[in-house]
Image (cartoon, rainbow, N blue to C red; front, side, top):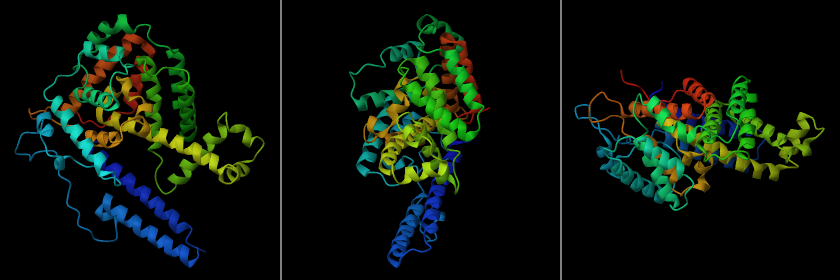
Length: 403
């Protein structure tokens, strides 16, 4: 499994590849440009170079000295930091993932909230069966404000669920509560997921996107069984989307959006009888403004799915146990303004170890959540259990276990 540091390096590489794609696009239209246009392109390339410097000093042609980010960890000679260490750290000690500039006011709010949350979770045990059930039964309550709901959900993630080996106990406890809780035909949905997984890459992405769109209208993702199964597809799409990279990634993503746009119930009649070339021309000209507005909404969904994947990579199965994290709630306009920054800080500043050397907090949290989820899923439906198990086996998270 990839380590957190290797994942951060991969994200940095992906960001640099995005810059390289943009640079390639700018250079591609250089030929035949007017002097004024070329001057503008030079300006764009210079700005692009400065953005690269923010992500990686080696990525720019200009030598720039950037001080290394401070790590929220002690030196090897000292005990590994626990939650108390991070809770008491100064804001400058929080690890900032390289990214494009964000409003400093939002970052400061996010930092303050994270310190408070880490302090509140200090030395708290994993969530019990009873606490988990209470959260599920009251997941629709609207008594809390947005920030309060976000903070409560993050505290649940930090604490984790159950302990390793708790599968049977959780299954027996929840059987009376969840045996008939599903609002969908689980066996049918699992079969659909299995069939999509057998498709070629592009066809699988389109089929998964369309299935998510259709299922959203039919199910209630605040119901736990529905939420779990729906978000297996959310995570699968998000992981597939990250495989689209390299110099041709812009064209591949554009082809995906064009294909979806043409096949929607709302817009498909516009392209009846057209050839592929005619469809492309119509999207870029006749329906340009309509397509642009539609794509903006789709991109927001894709971004939210990516955030769900980030959370899965950081917290493992726990993300499937709390309907708060439904993909719709991860969109920018569904949360507080500082919420995206808060998630980035949370993922990059979770304690890796207990004060006892050699015991991985992340691995213990992952295993406890996995066993808890297994018990809950078995209490609901056997097909659901094996669908989740197959997903976790196919898409392991980044946590490195300790022998």
